[in-house]
Amino acid sequence: MTTPALAIHNLSKEFDGAIAVNDISFTIEPGEIFGLLGPNGAGKSTTINMIGGVSRIGSGSIEIFGADNHKDYRTTRRMVGVMHQEIVIDNFFTIDQALRLHAGYYGVRDDEAWRLQLIDRLGLKPHLHKVMIKLSGGMKRRFMIAKALIHKPRLLILDEPTAGVDVELRHTLWDFVREINQQGTTILLTTHYLEEAEQMCDRLAIMNHGKVIALEPTETLLQELGTRTIIVHLQEPIAQVPDNLCCQATELDESGTTLQLTLSISQPTGDLLQQLCEIGLPIADIETRSAGLEEIFLQITKAGRVDA
Amino acid sequence: MNQQSDNSFNPWLPFYTLLRKEIRRFLRVASQTLVTPVITASLYLFIFGATLGERISVLEGFSYAQFVIPGLILMGVINNSFSNVASSLFMSRYLGSIVDLLVTPVTPTQFIMAYTLAAMLRGLAVGLVVWLISCLFATLPWAHPFAAIAIACLASFLFAQFGIIAAIHADNFDSLSMYTNFIILPLIYLGGVFYPISILPPLWARISHLNPLFYLIDSFRYAILGVGDLSFIVSFCTVTAMALGLFVWAAILIARSYRLRN
Image 1 (cartoon, helix red, strand yellow):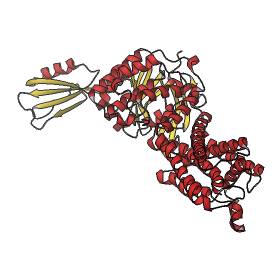
Image 2: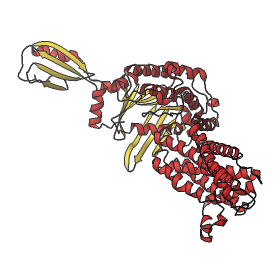
Image 3: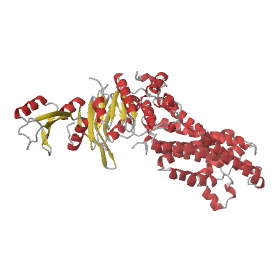
Image 4: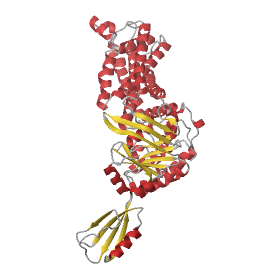
């Protein structure tokens, strides 16, 4: 059996009596891209801070590649790279100096080839000798990614890495994340861009009010909870929705000419279309729309589903 | 990316790196961290060495400049050791860049040692330059040079610990500056830098014995001039005990990550 890259057991954390993380448990396998999603205040960053060592563990335990994150912190911290949500920089140093220092903090000698590769891939070269205070917000974010990777971590944690960054950087970042993931780095990421999570992550955990309320492979989550909407435009108005249509929900607009039918992802559209033809509805046009992660996310967080 | 192997880990490299970073930090702003305190000390030397000092005599056999220089050297050591660690650590907390250290394998021992050594280096460097400039105004006998070095090192160590404690307890810049303005400065000025405690009225002389800076300044002056108000051993032991006490306090705060990790 492979040792998990990250194993969280019954992790909890309180701040002044308020529960931020409430008895969560999950594991991340080596080589996975794992998404941790949730609305603001769900407990994602607190969880990440406990994994990274910024916050003390309230109760429960965290293991990183089999090593205890509290007792054996010198081992676990070397294996983890964290890109924090807030921009954290030391204004005294240039990008180049800061990257060299960060490798040292992790107890590894500066690997010039790797440092230059990071600088090159993240487009930092033109700004290499500028002090941090003179960098734009986007450049600071790029630097923070380089900083998180400088010691070649086995588990990379990205806490909302694309918050407030332009499209170009977002694409650069995700291409790079996929590349390092293919080279063996496990990724744990949080993002508010659910489309990104849908495209990037192998598995997703959704947190709300400090609890993990859903934990599934991305595909399964989309299959189980995703819906498809069939919009039927009619040539003539109808007075009411036909009975016994094989779908989850139906809705007729005020004009009586647009019928909206909701199906689960697993339900074949063909059956419904056949049924509509048999009824003899005067169909002018048909549109289909699939609900993505965003709708699922809202559905789950509103319902407060607990099955993880 | 070839991930790091276990044997690529140098357990003391985090300490050397943090120490190097702290030294580079104060060298990068040397005009604030080294030049300004030296100019301040030089002004004191000019006032008390070349102008007023010629009209004042407080210790038989020594000029006022000779009397005041040990205190001014120590004042530079104390202020700069304190400021170095207090401002660096507080800024890291205030700006949030402390998380860059919290996520690394830096141990509490390495953390405290790196900040302390960098602070001592700056404090002792300022003290050395003040002494060199003081040579323009007076020649010191250096009665017990090794004792003087030991006291200067103890003073910088002690105030580096105090700097750590202040940086952790301070909530904002105002509360941090209160440590300098309302604790260190009055203790230095009332601790015998500019006058021997023996010339004070008995009550004030007794109160001065409660001032920890008095023991530092008096023992340092003894080590340089060969005369002091107190026995060197008593002062040395008192100063060592204070340094150890503050070290234990600072070490407990760092080991518990008090106000560093939430």
